[in-house]
Length: 400
Ligand code: PLP
Image (cartoon, rainbow, N blue to C red):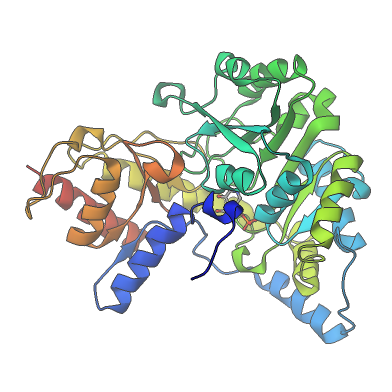
């Protein structure tokens, strides 16, 4: 029998991948399934980006890249940070990895020792706590509140910081809630961090270009430049440029941290795929006009889904200001029974029974550390969203 490692025993497969896999199996078995569990844009990579990868392949000589990324991409990322975010990172303060997921992994591998704590506000993206655990760290969860728009309060952050705290992880716009921190929100948190110089800040800005409110996107370092020597600013091309499968993410951080992450990456992948790096250069430096158009279409989808879900009895769906997820509460349905006699005791039961009875895949809040809610992705065509929401409403109406 296979003896798996302690590190592997500490982690779970992401709930998002599990939910989508179950839906895929049911569809393969002939069921008519509406998938609202996936976290990727439903449009294709823009043509000029694909062409840049093809041109790199045609030029040939695709040898191993420098571990932290080809110089041209590190320069393009440095310019992107300056132009779009108002933060200064020299190319030597940039690392390119196989997806932003791997930027996080390299950072934790490079910095965590057994017993070190990583503060993770809940609800959280599925991978932060498991990656911290995999590399020996201990996630320290801090619950946020729906009434605060699921944003971390400064007092709760202050209370969570201890002598072993290594990192605070922030993610805005947020997966799964869509919550988006404003400059004022960040100011309260960065003021706390200024008082605790041993705590590093990891900020995951991957949904930067999906913001729908009046306040523009801002990254914490632009709010508090004095945190430069302990902030890792993470971003990538997956969501904005519809490049999830290309696997390119990047991080900006102090040179010592980037060099430690380079050492970690040198023993993992040795560097990200070179044609994909050339494609990422085209993404960051080429025509950006599709971004506004996508933003408008995601905003319209958000409004559609929020209004349809709020017509389902027992669901309560707030209007988030970013990303492509809503995170409605299904607590009003706890204790009810499905027509088949199954009791809905938790949000996980709700998601399971919804998939069984109506063939709609969503992800239960338990996977994001916040029960009582489900995540519904609106990265899907309007007709798919209408069909999914009408099935969800029918399911809620069927509960007694
Ligand atoms: N961070 C968040 C909050 C995400 O939702 C995701 C993907 O779903 C990632 C990071 C991973 O992105 P990448 O494709 O760059 O690895």
